[in-house]
Image (cartoon, rainbow, N blue to C red; front, top):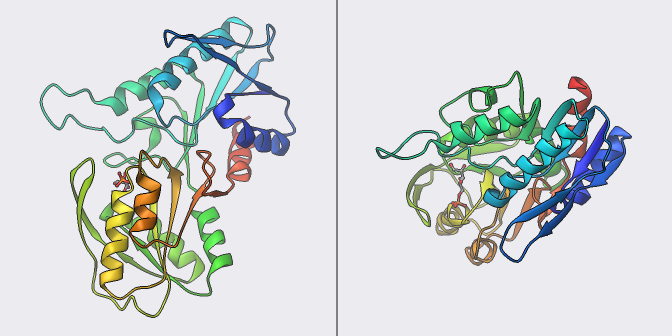
Length: 291
Ligand code: R5P
């Protein structure tokens, strides 16, 4: 087994390599002035390759993954495992208007054609229940960072209210809260546009305990910021946020802090200053289970 790590996921892949006691090679990546990419791998490869890269900002990364996986097969790779803790393109799961591409299905099929196993963490699966409905291979494995997040929160707070910003988060936030004995509440959210969300908080006394908003990802940050604004209006003065995937597009991070969130934490699925919850143990256990 060998780990092939893209430069943008190198430090996380190094931690994974230590856990698996496996050699790691960094994929050589060159961007030409015209925007094309060059990939270089070691000329001879072992049979089982673990290719590591999160698929945030996915367009260029997907082409590079195609080049990498195809080359890895040509160089001797018999089994290719993709470790993409953040899996992009999972949100567009229906055509909302006639003629729209259903990206989840198309990108899922592309990955299924390239890889034997696909591992990801907390993918945004809204209308389907299992990852292999989107990535049609037997080993499409969806892991959850819920235990890691729960342990982290338990270490930070004696007690807190966990707030899930929308009904989709209920199962996940409820499970974390029950595991660590915290209270939780679920808001009602309606997204009106890329940067526009409306939300209502359930009735509860938010004044006497820290509140941690828990979500699978922060993209524009508008969801977390809206929740923080409503919490402040409800009298909460001790507001935090935690997400699995730190996408933080554009002004998102500052926008969330400006809305009254004291600290934002995230996993290292995407490298970011907030990424203090490491996923290497979770990923290594899952790889050992299928290797
Ligand atoms: C949506 O259902 C997700 O769980 C997140 O709440 C959402 O993607 C966050 O997006 P943003 O940061 O752009 O509000």
